[in-house]
Length: 287
Image (cartoon, rainbow, N blue to C red):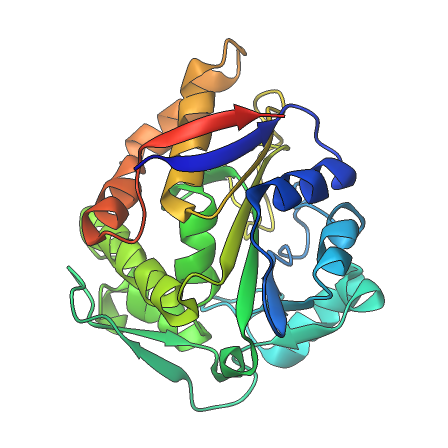
């Protein structure tokens, strides 16, 4: 059965909330709102004021995890300082999920490359998750959207290294590319399984650089903004974004496509679909 993906070319905080409501899923209990806090120096990440109406609509707690590389977010202390500088902690309650050891280990019995995922233990405090993703390129994954937020985004600092190394931390920067992409799909499946359907995914196609929000020095956006997409299926929402990029007539489209294809980015979607926690088949409902 095709997944429903709700889409609007209007990119406003109010439209995000409207599409979320159209998706028809009330997130129960205490809601974790996964965002990308933005590396210090990055100019492209979506700011707290853009997400504020959506976070408030679900009475959510903004959550993040520490990075596995040097920068402004690789320790809880530095990450919280960055959250303050970027305005997150001024607007919302903020929780660094892996602030306390040990990590929560999630089993992935059918994982292709990794059989476990390490996420911040604070995730146990939440009943549901709203995944707010800035869709754009990525230096290693080709693109970043819902699947990356679920995998690398929800992984602890240790867990990020584990995914990057396809289970071997020593191979953080040297893992064969497809093994890394398959590991991301494996890890994403673990988080989806953990929340057992109590998730909604928002992808915003704005400020689309070939680089991620994790880059302190990132290229400026290379193509025009496209819109907002919301779905209950993380695979479908990422596939829809990819399709919209490919269908674009914008002159900067080829630069982003080159980044996606040179990293074999579609492999993550293919591998995720093979694991069965979503579908690449969707109905795009424009509102």
